[in-house]
Length: 198
Image (tube, rainbow, N blue to C red; front, side, top):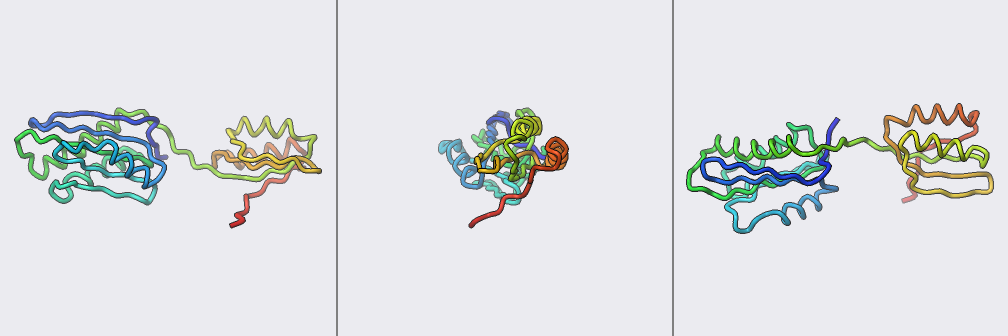
């Protein structure tokens, strides 16, 4: 299971007089990643190299360093540490000693990896949505069971025949919840997947 960051994180290293600062943050999409990258990049630094991953959407930049020596190692650190939906910027202030291609890969990848290793993680839980319909007599038990399954109420409508709920919950909870609801309501409750009206 992959994690995202619980909060933004940073880590700084000095390598042969060059200063490397890794800054990482959780992202909701590619636009958020690019906005974060722009917000933390230092125009006075020598390089602001970065990478982000949001599911199958990922990008990286060497920002003037030799090709493949910065952005890809940062992306490899994201993947190697088991993260998704995050962006990492590693800013370098050149200290006068060249590191060579291997040294750059280790410096950028290592600073990013250490930042992510020390950061506070938050598990990415796959979520699913369902529509529940029940009679008024089952409302109490339905609300109780939804709470124990960690379900979030998105919409609630009162109908002449009872209650219609649109909920989101962890995907791994749906089968157990459906069974508990069926047993508690003596199979009176209807559970279905939401239909897109687009």
